[in-house]
Amino acid sequence: MGYVDPGYAEIDTQLAIDIIGVRSPAVVRQEPMFDPAHERPRS
Image 1 (cartoon, helix red, strand yellow):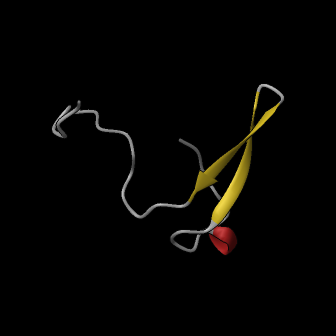
Image 2 (spheres, rainbow, N blue to C red):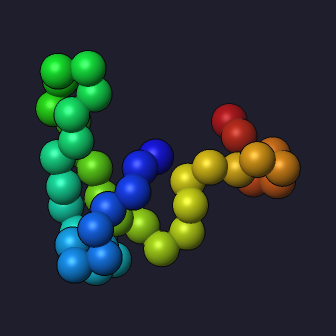
């Protein structure tokens, strides 16, 4: 999870993020991927 400048935040925009020196793919999504209330089922 992260924050993106609104100029690059169009839904489904493909990005690359740096996590401790490793580049990983990311996609801008409308809904947060974080589920603090644990309401979404998990496998």
